[in-house]
Image (cartoon, rainbow, N blue to C red; front, side, top):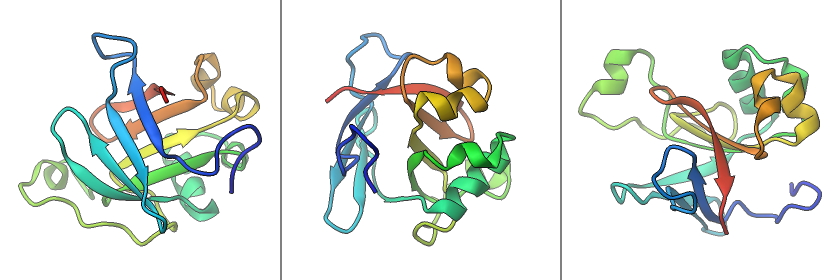
Length: 146
């Protein structure tokens, strides 16, 4: 499902404000034809990612304490399996992938239009429609670079 004015794919390069250079690529997302592959440019890690369905977006929004209906217009990718605890997160064994679509995983990259962001509180103050989440870094503004 492509959102108005947005390409049908998440394929592209993404960054965030915690980098030295504003245009530094942090993640590279490639379309595999059946999903996406996300590469972290910092460590070269590569993971398979998939689009969250309605149920997965609602589960994530509930975890964040945001109004569930504000997830309706969001479009999100996720990868890995969310850890059950901090011990699980810090374990040497990498998390297993989640079932496609039904729940969010370890990482989440979302595009949320302004009207929906405003309903979630501080996301409405972001300049970008994009944000990234992981259990250690939390939620941070992201931006699509190309």
